[in-house]
Length: 457
Image (cartoon, rainbow, N blue to C red; front, side, top):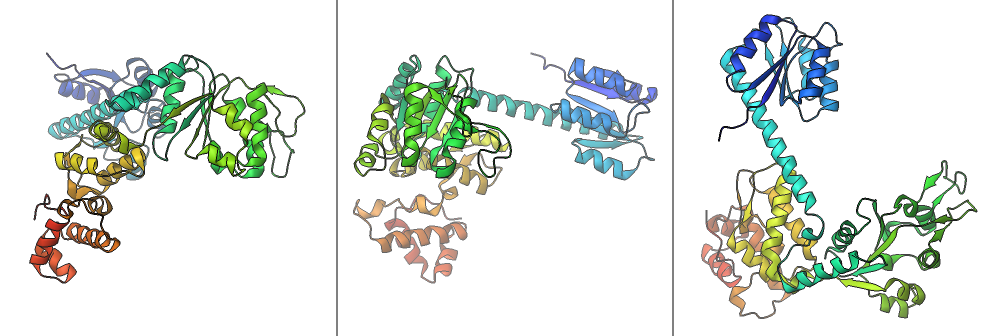
């Protein structure tokens, strides 16, 4: 199958330049031409070219005005500016600052120009591929974002689908990092409210005296610092969903106001006397034991019973470690796309190590470990290796201790050993010098602490 030709717009007021460039590039690309700034903008708007070869000065345009408009209104179009020998160098520098990919001086060398055009088009295609991948990953952020083929995750997805079909209050419970917000977003996206806003409120981050202002809004002058009218989060949610995260940390003094909204679907902005209707669906989440908080008097019992109409328990990662491989692949795809780098896969020994770890921070910790490894690792590598992982994680490998509980001193020794190995590039001789011990000691401790999978470099 013949590859589709890329569209290149040659925009220059010099007819000979237009003709020469068109003839030079026509074999590989679809060529458009424009002789004025107005024609250039019409062509950009109508034809959506992949690349514009743009004269740095047009008689009917201010300096760089057209470039700035293209980069602002059509950011997906790459631009190479064409500058004559008499052009002000500072103008070229400014063009690059405004987002031009490159510049080519006149008269141009044909081979050099073709190479620069091809490089710009390769960049354009790479960016389009990256945007498409990010969009695909974003599209999967609903129920498919809850990755896992285990029975645990299958039941979780089924529960969320069932609750999305009805329209009541839902409480997500689970440890920190288990994906409660992701579950709430999936619930919203599967519901009839998917086209309306999904508004997130972290109840633990709002000062007690500002809770009602943040949730209900306020009128100008309602309190010191209220210099304008402000719409609250309940009103901003409109006909969508309001997600109250960390509901267990809401101040006791403000819980009665929330209970009233849940019961009557009405609220009053601070400084107003007229009630307003709350049309949003309530989704809440907590990592607290709400029954315990009811017993110790920090959470209202009536509010507890009101919000636990339907509950979803988010499982900790240690209970479905069989999903590690799928989670790692999903996170690596997303992170590599966001960083604009080639796809990376985890080595088998990395996946095996991950399955031995208990992940106290759950899926959030897993994502953070992968992100840190990619940021600190060598960009050209396409495989995530054990050497790329943090020392604290590697120190959990205890193959030589027969599963016995390690002492704090041994754990610290393992972490120190792994750090020294990383610092020395996993060379046992250099590691021994760093730690001031014999090389045979390093070799023995590597075996004892289960680090025999590491290769000496």
